[in-house]
Amino acid sequence: IIAVKPDATMVAEGFMRPYILMLWGAFAFACMGAFTHAAKDYCDWQVIAFARSGVALLIAGLLAFRDKSPLVFLRPWTIWVRSIAGSMSIMCNFYALSRLPIADALTLTNMFPIWIAVLSWPVLGRFPEREVWLSVLLAMTGVFVMQQPYLASGNLGTLAAVSGSFTSAVALIGLHRLKGIAANAIVFHFSAVSIVILTFVLVVFPATEHSLEQLRMPWPGPGLLLGVGLAATAGQLLLTRAFSGGAPARVSVIGLTQIGFAMVFDVLLWGRAVTLHSLIGILMIVGPSIWLMTRPAPEAP
Image (tube, rainbow, N blue to C red; front, side, top):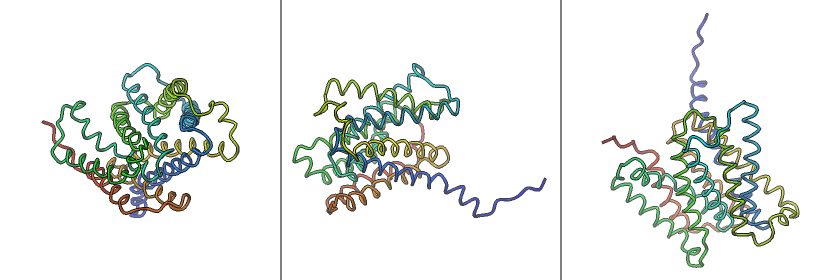
């Protein structure tokens, strides 16, 4: 048997593959944001979020059936942490995407590394270092700088996006603790729980027009809803494959490119003029997030 040593090109391609996947995943999430922002003219955010979870549930179920992945329901309890927190994040994020420019909403919803660092105190019993608290302060200041016009007008999209980033952090902590469960089964459980919660929300907080009536929306409304679901599912699958093969910190940083893609969509599709205070605010939020994702893990006491 003759062993063939891989050349430098093959090694480089294998090394870069997870990061290219994450780049495509970031583009998919930005597309999801664009579809959501456009669909708000045809239906309420509750219907958009329901469509996103419905498409993801269908695709995850089909993939689990194809791969013969066993589904989970009651146990382990951490899957409920991931699914419930993730469902809350979906509601907050889609509300924000229907109220704010895409780049602003995705910047705020990607603040989860900051909250993960803060949650290390109650979850891991490790009090965050001074630098972490300074990062939180800088990011919160960035939120105020970037979102001042919306806060002044009483737009709740900012509060929803920040809340969504916090619940995303809780969901990711729960996801990190899930071992030995197929990704398709996790996505299926998450999507099923989110549909139940969204149904409850639709009953308690009805949409401006009956949900069934909104489903009769004119074209391209149905196509936009399908685009939301397909883009979100594609982004989730690409993200999962990227994290399974690449360094998590680097993959996470590349995931932030969705903000750049979203800004391009804002300018080209909606004619948004990017202001200086918006750019400064984005940098004040993204900078601490990148630092927290790439810094060495603190030593255990």
